[in-house]
Amino acid sequence: RAGCAIREIFDKEGESGFREMERRVIAETAAGETPLVIAAGGGALVDEGSLALARQRGVVVFIRSAPQAIVERVKKNDKRPLLHLPAGQDYEKRLLSHITQMLEQRMPLYLRSHFLIDRDGLEAEDVAGLIVAYLEKMS
Image 1 (cartoon, rainbow, N blue to C red):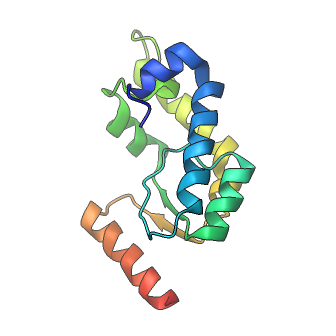
Image 2 (cartoon, one colour):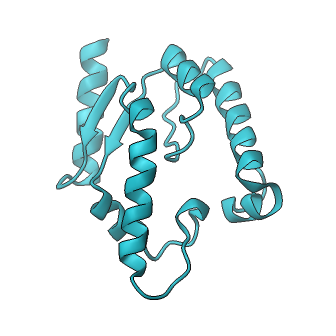
């Protein structure tokens, strides 16, 4: 939507600029009438206002993974600026520590989701099935 990669936005605007863009997109999306599924990044709903709006206008699902599982998924991905650490000695250990700290800070907000799924050991199709079953129970 911004016409460039997330890393470029972080480089040009910093995290605060990225988060402001994210807040605007969440607000615009929430104002629409078309039902949507939004796969938001881990920081998208850390903003109190965005979380409140998402909870009011939709169903918020928190897909929880163990920190080590997150490390395995992201350690070779340079598209996540907040998880990009300098390579070198103890890289995975430092990344695990960083992710654990971020999760601890964010968890109180994550736990305000309508529905929580523990993802570890599940395939994407299993997670999708759990979400569909939850939504069907709600309707």
